[in-house]
Image 1 (cartoon, rainbow, N blue to C red):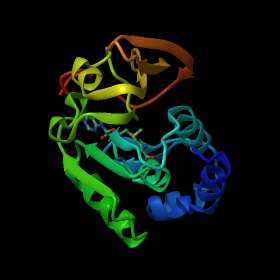
Image 2: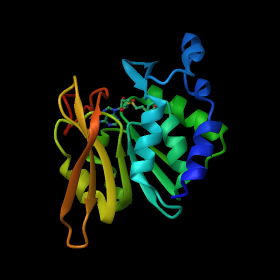
Image 3: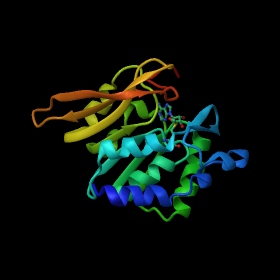
Length: 195
Ligand code: SAM
């Protein structure tokens, strides 16, 4: 991954485009902001850091769980070949898709549903990013990660999670390390915190 390209694109992205109404005037702050339905657009510095850690390559196929506003999706789509993004709230997905189409992305595929189970049809993925707090490491996502692939996922209770970076070795084993403590909204669904 070309870090200079990542930072340049991150700086060029207008975050106010990804939020609505009154929230636009707070878009320059380095913090999460409400996007409706009890969900948030993530803190920009954390979006950048998670993308840097995931390190997608130009030929990577990426799975993103939790499309939200589409801000993180744009960064992933710029830095990789294809992004498969899953969001459980149809209204959020509709808005995110419109924004990303206005930005002329044609390498993003959208699905409304329980992303804690991944998107089996297009697996395996070279990179997987989860942007909501999982209760446990979802087996389905581990299965859908390609050999030598990387996954970044916050795991832990709703008040504080450990951001985990995983790699899958050639023998199929998982190596996992904790990067930092974070606070994300809850991942719902089979591997999350309820329906
Ligand atoms: N990265 C996004 C952005 O920059 O706008 C913010 C993502 S927000 C912190 C987490 C998102 O995960 C929410 O939109 C929420 O609806 C979604 N989500 C939670 N559980 C999910 C699930 N099981 N499948 C798909 N999306 C889920």
